[in-house]
Structures are given as C-alpha cells and as structure tokens.
Image 1 (cartoon, rainbow, N blue to C red):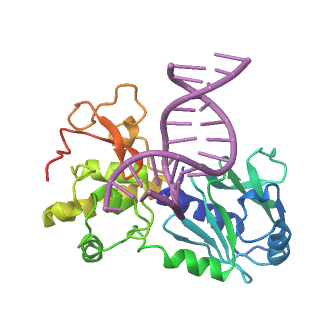
Image 2: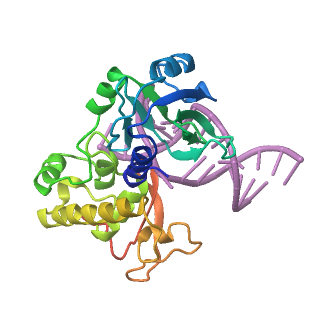
Image 3: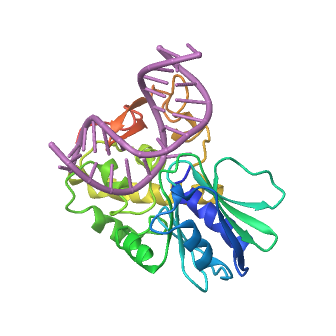
Length: 259
DNA sequence: GTTTCTGTTGTCAC
DNA sequence: CGTGACAACAGAAA
C-alpha cells in the first residue's frame, strides 16, 4: 500500500488514536520487524511514554513521544491500525502498542521494512531523504532535477531526490504530465518540468485526501490491473514495462518516447 | 499437488 | 547511471 498518501493516512490514524495518550505496554509478536532494538528494550523504553503529535516525512512515519521517537516504514504491505482490545488478532500483527483501552497495531505481511527507535535512527533516515514531495515548490522542484542525467521516473522515485513518491504515484504523475517514464531529465524542456510539478501537486493533494492513490476509472491507476488496460484519456492500449527497476504502466500515445 | 511469477518497499554489487 | 538479485510472503498463474 504505502506511498506518501497512505503513510499520511497512518499518521492521521496515529494522531486520532494515540496523541496525548500514554503507551501502557508494547507487545512484540515478531521481533523480525525490529531494527537495532530488541523487543524487550522497545517495551522498556516506551512503556509510560506519552505520544505527541506524529510527523510524516516521505514514506516514513515518526511517532514522537515525551521519550524516544519510534520510526515506522511500511515497505509494500505494512500498515498502522487503531483497534480495540477485543478485535481479533491478525497473523500479521507484528507489534502492538497498548494505548489506554485501544491498540495501535503495526501490521505487515512481508516484513520488508519495519520499526526503528531513537534519535540516531531518526537522524540517519532523515539525512538520506530529499525534500518531502507534498507542498514542494516549483523553484525547488526545478532545482532538484537540474543536472541529473538519468531517466525522469528514476529521478522522481529516488527518495534522496524527492521523498514520498513510489511506483504508482510516479506512473500516475508522468501519465498526467504526458511524459514517457524513460525520458531523460536533461532532455526535458522547462515547460515540461513545470507540467510535471503541477501534476505532482494535483495527484498528491487528491491522493492524500483519499488516503491512497485512488483507483478511479479516470486515473491511470484505475487500470493497472486490467487484463487489457486502456488509456482513460485516449483509449489507446497501455504499455507495461520495467523502468528504474520497477514495473510501470504508461500510454505510448499520450506519453511519446522521443526526447 | 507443485513450481513459478508478481508486487504500492529499499539496498547492494556489478 | 542502469540492471538484476535479494529480502519475505501470499495469492495467482502455469
């Protein structure tokens, strides 16, 4: 699930469910999601801490407390849920934070990422991120892309360039801006870069409101998994292929390849 | 029934 | 810089 809009949704969940409340207990069902901290230490360091306003940066979620900060990354299949104690346990509930009479559950099938604890981890992670994609100004956007030599898709899903965009979002944005994912950044005109920035803003605002990249019929994302996917704009057949190590979808008519 | 492939993540070696 | 392998796992495809 998680790209920027999904993580923003988890941030809201955390705020609504936990902010201002104390962590009574932490139960680690699978220490395999913990990085640089044992289950026992996580429990000990967080017990009794009061949750402050949570923060999202790119695809990272920071659960600040009056003690240490907990860092979450959700990989491809993770999520944060607000549950009651009576909700049935799920086999992929890896860590459960008991907060008052509720539970915040870190649920993740594949365990590609996980949970970190403490300022050192926070500092390291944030130092490796580019500016957050949401609300990124045009001048800064132009600046980030200038001088890059690779393809445009590789650039915008690189978290050290811009934080928050993933495979789905980048395909959606490029399709709307009518730019082929394998266009070279250096070959883009200033009008094209401007378009890209505009569409990034639009797609992000809609997606954040929805809490995910919405699979609407009028969006490219609504057709990724169709057996015979067609472009919602020109009705031509969509193409699927690998770019920047990810399987992407684009419309060869609306998104011409040539530089 | 069994093997293979795919995927909204990131990192590493070549 | 780009590509492929990998990490872990479920569900679908073969």
